[in-house]
Image 1 (cartoon, rainbow, N blue to C red):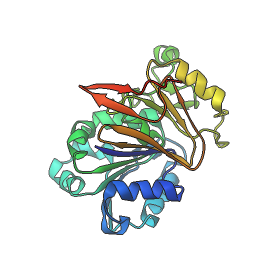
Image 2: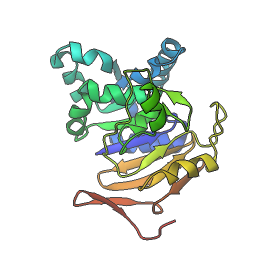
Image 3: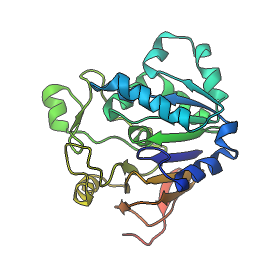
Image 4: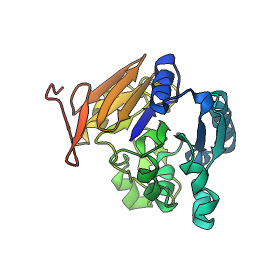
Length: 252
């Protein structure tokens, strides 16, 4: 399993080099498939999806395809699975986390992903990064009252009837991206991240837009030219031992 979990993508040389290391060859020699589903659950969705496709295209992939999760329940596996299986990387964009969580599971894509990751690199951006964690943040009171999955840390509501707090749990930590960013309606600072970590009983990585979490098989490390914090956990590395995520004992 090779994962590179970012806040906004390959924003610097360190993250790009980490991606190339995981791929084992230049980006220009690789085929990738992009998943932009999370972007559509906002008023600027069509524009954002176009800009994200341009961003991936500018990364220089030899071949680049698009997979739309909302289409998968109505088409044959043979229409999409062979292309994904032959890809070197799966690129999963950010956007509405609850909406992406819902479609990851409802589309059946999540069931295929562990097998795909035996040979394919997963490159996540924001919400796309959090899909592999144990679950997503949401306000249980608003869910009970309105039936809406609402991330009360980023003030983001999933569409009613198409939201979830589900996560794959392929890694033993949570991620809160965009540390220090000024483009949210709330202040995404260290204090906010501390409050987020207090809700959890497992480690939480708070990462800024110049940071990524790299996972290779059982090893976890931080790739950063910016700022990041680890809460409720251990410094530097974790390991998966007999199905349980553990870590070094130099706990924060």
